[in-house]
Image (cartoon, rainbow, N blue to C red; front, side):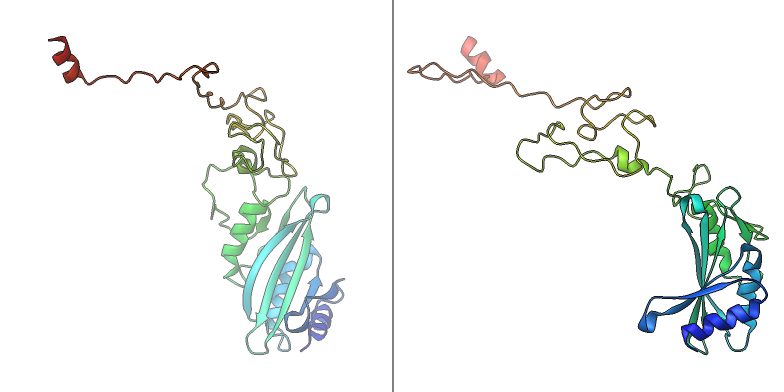
Length: 243
């Protein structure tokens, strides 16, 4: 079946539910992409698996996309091993209550994917029963793949050093531009501002002190012979000289 035929077939199976179909990708990578209401999510996955013409018996992956104020898109890719065609199913959940039905009872292999999506985006999968941490430590707070989540390493990583003439190792010269969404120094966190990341000592959190300047000997006057500092004598030679 072509991607267009796959899309029309799943829409017909879900009628009278309103579902829309498009084709993503191109040539051999083209896939039917079907958007379904969140209430019909599990039914759509089951219909794609059980229908003889679709026969999408292999669960490939499931994840989500943060669409900011529009909510989250939950996306699943199914594949037919026998008929060699794929199907992208997609539904949108509101940001205020990001909950969708679990499809573990349809594809047990979705358990790992739903746990990861719950952990990274904060989306609940009703009926899963075991949405425990998968990749992050239990004490971790927040959902790293949400777009409002600030990656601390982007703000705390020190400036890599002098890259152009006039830039010193102490952080002088041109300052780096903060990535989008990263707060200004001193607005969050307890880690001191690294030297060069936002200026030495800048912000209420303080900063890393600059490297002290080296002391250089004074230059001799014109015509005067430079003097070399006396080298310390070994202890044994000093005692013999005194005797």
